[in-house]
Image (cartoon, rainbow, N blue to C red; front, side, top):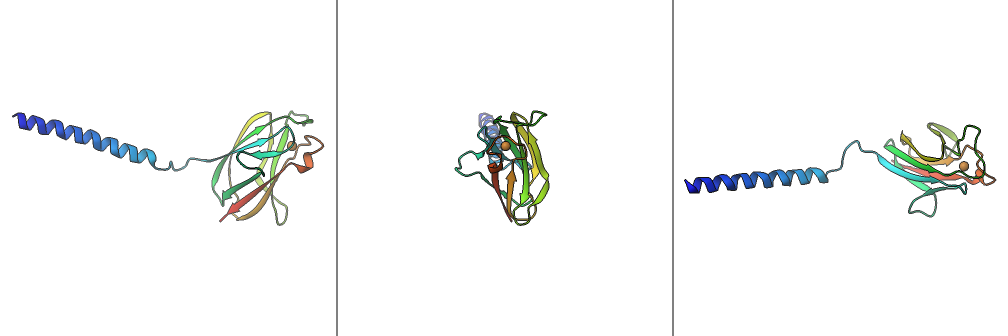
Length: 146
Ligand SMILES: [Cu+2]
């Protein structure tokens, strides 16, 4: 009788251990459908900045879904409706606009979920709000990998 009881306890300990093992493996798997988050600063000095990089460049995979989290800081001038910077993307080779990547930025955090272009290559993001005398130089490079 005692031996049976012991087996029963061992069995449940093993079961609990197995559940923990499976749960920890599942927790380590990538979460499918989770966005690739890209943090950008549209700064008060009229420059786009990407954390950890000295030049504003972002790299995407063709067609991937990304969450753009853009922190916009007011520069010297802004639009009549209070937008402090713009964010529009062109294909580098022919300056064609990527129509789904065209935003105006209010002060603070702006979030947009967008799909990367399906065509690999180089793209350029430009500011579309006249934010200061340096507005023309407010650009960011986007590299889309196959
Ligand atoms: Cu700007």
